[in-house]
Length: 71
Image 1 (cartoon, one colour):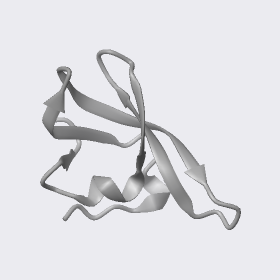
Image 2 (cartoon, helix red, strand yellow):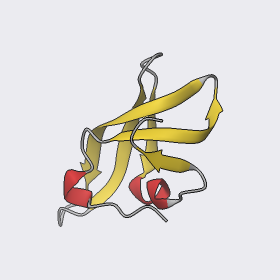
Image 3 (cartoon, rainbow, N blue to C red):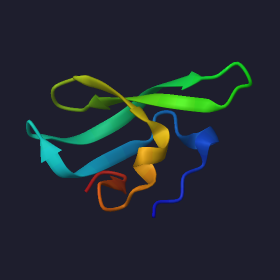
Image 4 (cartoon, helix red, strand yellow):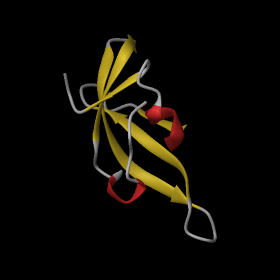
């Protein structure tokens, strides 16, 4: 289980364990917040292809799918 500080999530770097479409390295480029300022979702941008994916930020805690940093 990855420990994530939601306040430092923006512009953090992530590596996918099982890359799809040869996209392995990602950067968190945008956070979506609720009315009471809780983070709801984040946008992950693939470094090479620049494709953007919206996901629940809590999915990044799953260490069987994501690693912190680029590896």
